[in-house]
Image (cartoon, rainbow, N blue to C red; front, side, top):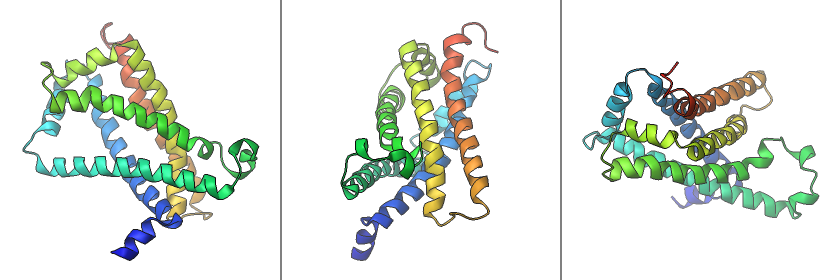
Length: 224
């Protein structure tokens, strides 16, 4: 067990953990955006309410296990990313301001820690608004009604959209970096993986961003 802890604490181990946890979270985002698009159904939230009730059932033990795993991976991914960034920064020995960053890294990679930090703040607010209030509290209305109230607030909705833009940048680099870490680097599949990662990242975040846009500007007007 000691060798395993030493390995995941090494530079290579940290990168591998970032890749594996990142891909797991990527898969969760795909599932999450598909489920959240149920909010756009013209059924007064019936489909989404059923989904939320199934997801929130205390008897759904497998989902509770997955949920705890998701929180663990998210927290570990965030902490590990910050540690990896700090280790890389110390190794360079000079501030980024005097480093020719554009010659040594991609546009996306230079802002991973900044975008990741803002996304983490957004997640805390998002979880407080929905998970804490509707899974651990007693708000007095359904999850769908809570979503409508929350996203009809322009301040929250535009912060949500801004966070999704940052998430798209974050995912583009994360997707490519994960596969490079796992060994798929500079081969015939690299151009396809890069293009696929960009397209998939944009689609995921556009799907999320569509929800606040809908409730801000289309919901009260009768939808599409």
